[in-house]
Length: 216
Image 1: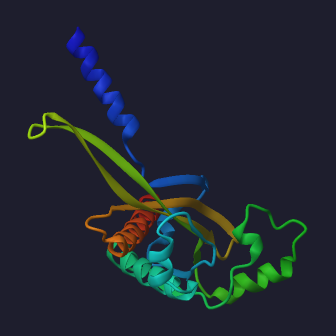
Image 2 (image 1 turned 90 degrees about the horizontal axis):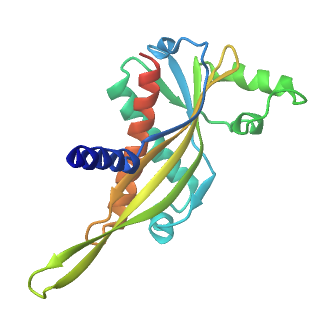
């Protein structure tokens, strides 16, 4: 009986400590996501960048939002080509209207401006990055050091990337998905830049995988 209780306790700990790669906040329930296949998608980056950690590393590598958005577009293009063949992704040259970035409806907004924006896309869907956040976390561990007959400890730092993604149906002007794709990578031997870029790539891969799962 005790062994069973211990086993169940360990399972509960494992479930609590598991990390999800997606934080979903909205999904249209009455939509056929299989229509995403063989579609044309406009993609837009973001200027909303929140740096909680890795500030120097990020600013050295990405001195402006344009360089980061170029990387995001390349990563999303590769992931779509790999995970959802047939999708044609192209870059949006204009800015996404503010009303689409927030959670407001089109009520009391310039509908003519919204109509003009959607009609200019010449695509089936709009996918844009609403914001990106860079943070970190530490994992501390202790172990017995036989050489010193004492307890020793170590600490590992992970770079954490959170990308907020929004997906819209262009013809219906309908919001389909809003979620955050998460990525992480452990810093090894002061490899801050490598960990930053790997975490960004992981977040993008998880985001496209989530979109693909909705389209099955």
